[in-house]
Figure 1 (tube, rainbow, N blue to C red):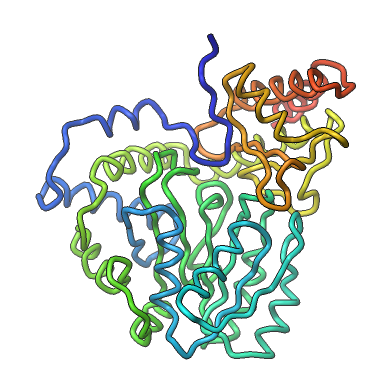
Figure 2: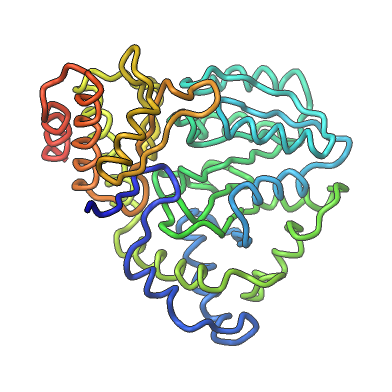
Length: 379
């Protein structure tokens, strides 16, 4: 019997102390005790986001916060610019489409990062209410140049920058206020080391001003209503109480580690993963702009990546992710964000090596582990 190992880019493992915190008896959400929890979580989220502004909390998946950003910042007559470089970039324009909003889609080849110069040209051609993009595109393992895009958008006061950082916040340094990001979104089941069920969205003064002008229908995801509630250390609707208690523990853990160490740990483990896989003769799907949250690699020529994923599950009780849509069967993805340490990375690489050899890939056992260990030992 093998212990279950979750090495996907989300959901990610939940620390034992967080599980214990969430197992405490439920408390009522309209009590002073819970208000104290929310007050601590409010400040912790501002610390993590590196913002002076409020961070809204929703009982939802990250997609809920994405939809909320669209319906709160946009008006019926507005136009949006969407960066689509993968499965989750695609989600932005599908939300816009669902609300009948005019939008231009900037298609980016899967595995590549968006070129800020192309966004700059689009901003000069049209007046956009918002630019919607990912920081880390989970489906391709790409990290987009958010800072460079933010500098461009800041030159256009009529345009807000909305960033899906669902697999980026808590992984890389994204100083929300310093970069001028108007809405930064994340979810609980990634680097925040919680089960799925919470979504978060920061709100800049510019974003709030746009909310005042929005005439799109909204109810549960009403940012103005939720902002008023969070400022009183509560939520507009019934919150996911146990998850917020877990979040309190997570933020305490993150503060104990410190932001700089948090980012360094993720960068080191991501580098070790990439070097280990490359040593096995595998080609990175995103070689020029890899994400520190998830590594995507091509399977060997002629080998179905889905078989590698299946072998890891059947032989080692380990879950990694396969490719989606046009990348299905071509790539597999290993997550290294959140509650992982170097031993987890080495376990995953050893399992991949074994699966590749079983499928007929001619490599020397331990070659990937050796390359990863070299990275980890150098630090």
